[in-house]
Length: 134
Figure 1 (cartoon, one colour):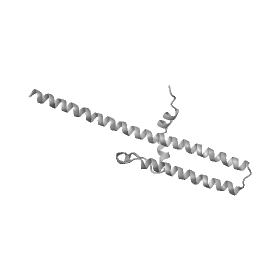
Figure 2 (cartoon, helix red, strand yellow):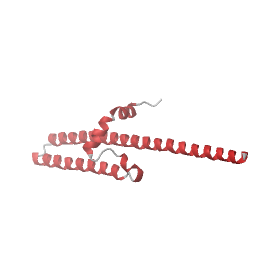
Figure 3 (cartoon, helix red, strand yellow):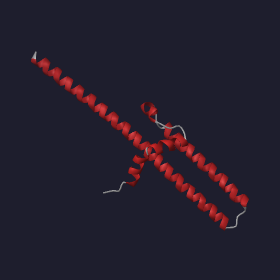
Figure 4 (tube, helix red, strand yellow):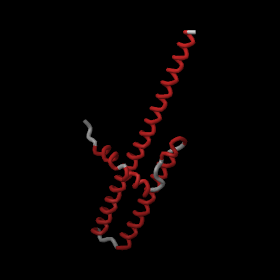
């Protein structure tokens, strides 16, 4: 009878340990996916800023180079189309890479909702980008 009790206690302890480990690892996985989303969106937002600065610089160079208004207007249109395409493809790729269990963890559907999500989590993103190595 004692051996049965020992075995049952061991089995209960083992299953409890496995259950709590599973719950803790699930919670950690969710935090990692959320952090990866925020960091990825933060990097995309910064790249859009740099992309915009590069476009503005190019327009200044075209103006100083004496190019016609039609060429400058054509560059602006192509630039905006490329920027819009890049935004859409990057958000679509993030969403498409969340499959299975993680499908419901995406809190945005397009660029505007992604930037709104990034704005609501601004403190976490700023903490990541402004944190210094020690």
